[in-house]
Length: 410
Ligand SMILES: [Fe+2]
Figure 1 (cartoon, rainbow, N blue to C red):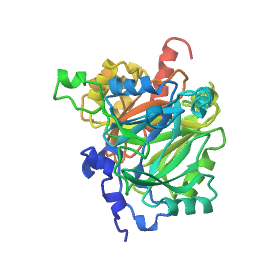
Figure 2: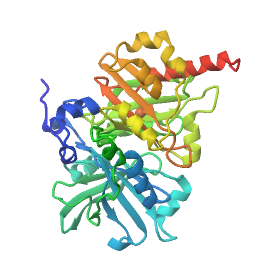
Figure 3: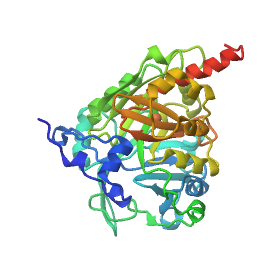
Figure 4: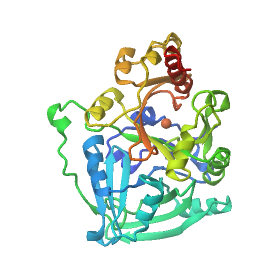
């Protein structure tokens, strides 16, 4: 008999702070119960998503204005960090950290010159940093930072870091003895942006997203299974059912994909590798412009994707287009069945639908957020489905091909 442990069944401090209930969270990100006592690398949740960007000051303002995030903490020259500035923003339980270089010799600028705007760290909140590092070391992980305490007047954080694909890392954070705004060295900083949409219509939800649903990594051709094994062995993550193999991928999307997840599914990492196809793979394009493996997209969970997309579009966020034929396809209509809104409402907003045996999901992808064709966001509204939109690969790319065919271009 499986016992349900508190790790899977309790809210994290960040989730409590965001006024999320466990039921909401189960629906939002597909949380499951699991037996934490057998976990070799217990993970509570994603702690943050850390980006390096060309201009953290303006990026922080942009994410407040366009994505409705709240500024929460800051560190920079004024607080004793000479060579960089970091802004900490929040929406629900999702925390983003944007860092930019200040001094000309800052290593942050060197990283940015190579990779452009991108994700450098996917920190994980863990209850026991030392236990995780002991296990990671025995499983062959590269330890970038040994476990150590960092302290300021708000308390102590125990932290360490391990390397993952490319130049990306997983910092491990135990903040159970810490009450500060983010990490030692950061000071609280409140948002100065007035919410235009809240002033116009107080019934609109304050947040455009409530949590991080999953973070996708792009790795080099032939390396996907290696990284799946890495997460299996080092973090005890299990493989989720969703698997995009070359049967679907080579004809349409030119990628192969597998998904690993932490015990309670709060942390989900799909891993892509390019597939050889008729055209250049979208993953190859990423690897070329990011100069190696890295984080491709962050999926953000929302409980009202229609309103979020309307507001995000008004705020200037651009989404990938979906051809009308996707919605008019009788096969798709039969496959997705009834969803909570008329399909015309989805068509108007170019929102995609996928259904599996557990339920359905609504999703949409933004265009790349920076100058390079690299990192982008997904917005996702789950209704029981624990998938990632596999059904949309074939449907979407077939729809595009039908349009090409109608123009005589196939
Ligand atoms: Fe995704």
